[in-house]
Structure formats: structure tokens, C-alpha cells
Length: 217
Ligand code: B12
Image 1 (spheres, protein in one colour):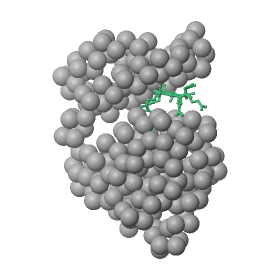
Image 2: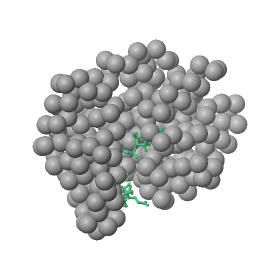
Image 3: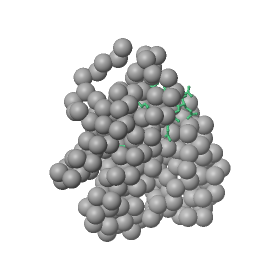
Image 4: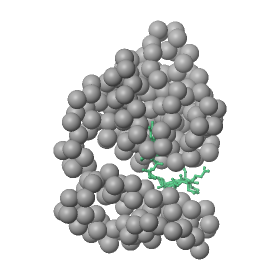
């Protein structure tokens, strides 16, 4: 059995797929005025543990599905708070999507949601998005940034393909937009391999990066 040391009760409940108890605790913490991002981060920690238990054969795909459902319900509860908190000043446009072959969309949705809370216009292409769809929409929407999400190993190759196609198109149409990538396993090395401009370990860091880059322009 996989038993990482989980730092919070909430992470533990998510990891154990205790949906009811986890949601009860989230509601209690919201009422107590806890930081919604902290709540999300702790759930994220629980999700990582779910992934590890899946790898170890302790959980099956049903466990992954269940954890995704718990996370969705948690986000539903904290989203109004996040919307209240954000100042909503930025005015950039961001195109986001999960690359082809990958159906994980929870992290990408969080990035989109937090961007929208901070005043960005978000064009969300969904999950399992082929490179040519990214390319077509980029020409149409002329975004300030493109955010690609990918959680499975196969996504790295697809991100590389997508980045290459986007760069080619940007050159032809004289467009300029930094490409930011994210997803559970992304690091410096993968960012370099893929040819993206930046990678960010979490959605809020991605929002801050877009804000900083926008200010610099
Ligand atoms: C929930 C889940 C699922 C759900 C997804 C539901 C959904 N609607 O997304 C379902 C059940 C569908 C699923 C399916 C599969 N999954 Co799955 N899944 C997970 C799990 C447990 C959690 C993922 C998650 O949502 N985490 C919470 C979110 C918030 O985290 P996140 O996505 O990483 O996003 C955060 C950051 O990375 C960042 N971020 C993400 N994207 C972006 C983009 C930008 C631009 C920025 C700035 C930031 C950013 O912001 C977020 C918050 O801060 C992970 C475990 C893990 N360690 O990630 C496995 C995991 C990703 N899955 C895995 C696997 C193997 C699969 C399946 C192949 C299983 C199967 N045999 O069918 C399929 C894949 C099908 C496919 N082709 O895509 C493996 C991948 C291993 C690998 N090396 O490839 C993992 C790592 C589990 C494991 N440890 O084995 N999965």
C-alpha cells in the first residue's frame, strides 16, 4: 500500500476517496474563512497520492475517476470565493487547451478559471485538442498567451508537435505569444524538450506569470 506522509487532513480524505467527509471539511473551512487556494492545494496533494496508489495497483481507474469527481465538487465550492478575491484588472487574452491524446482537464480548467477570476479573457479549447485546432484558433483569436496542459507521458511529444506548429503559424501571420505549459510531470527539462517559453508548476503561478508578462509589454 502506498502511504506518503500527507500533511493535511483534507489531502488525506481526498487520497482515501472519502467524498462526503472531504466536502464536509471543505465547507467547514470555507465558513471559517480559510484561503481557497490553500484548500485547492491540499486537494491537489491528495490527488497526487491517488495517482501514486493507482501506479502501485492499489487503486484502479475508478479511483482516478472518483478523485476527479471530488476535485470538481471542491472547485465548485471554492470558485465563488476566488472570484470575490480577485481584482479582475488584467485584460489579456489566453488560449488554453489540453493537447491531443490527453483527456485530463481538471488542471487546465483550474488555470482557465483562475485566469478568468483575474480579468483575463479565456478561450478554452477543451481537452484532446489536435495541433491544427490550436493553430486555427490562434490565427482567429490572436491571443497574448497560449497555455498547453498535459498530464501523461505521451503528451510531451504532442506538446512538442503543437508548439512547433504554433511557432510556424505565428511566423507566417506575424503573431507573437509566449507558450506556457503545465501539468503534473512537467519540469525544466520537458519544457526545453517541448520548446515552450515557460512552464509553471501550478495554475496560480501561471496566472501570475501572465500578469507579469503583460505588465512588461
Ligand atoms: C483524475 C485523474 C484522471 C481522470 C481525469 C479526469 C479529468 N476530467 O481530468 C481520468 C479517470 C479520466 C484519468 C484517466 C487516465 N489517467 Co489519469 N490521473 C488522474 C490523477 C489522479 C489526477 C489528475 C488531476 O486532475 N490532478 C489535479 C489537477 C489540479 O492537477 P494538474 O492537472 O497537475 O494541474 C495542476 C498543475 O499541474 C497546473 N497545470 C495543469 N495544466 C496546466 C497548464 C498550464 C498552462 C499551467 C500554467 C498550469 C497547469 O495547474 C494545476 C493546479 O495548480 C493523476 C495523478 C497525478 N499525479 O496527477 C492521474 C494520472 C495523470 N493519470 C494517469 C493515467 C495512466 C491515466 C490513464 C492512461 C488510465 C487508463 N489506464 O485509462 C487515463 C488517460 C486517458 C488519456 N488518454 O488521457 C497517470 C499518467 C502516468 C503517465 N506517466 O503517463 C497519472 C499520473 C496517475 C499515475 N501516477 O499513474 N485520470
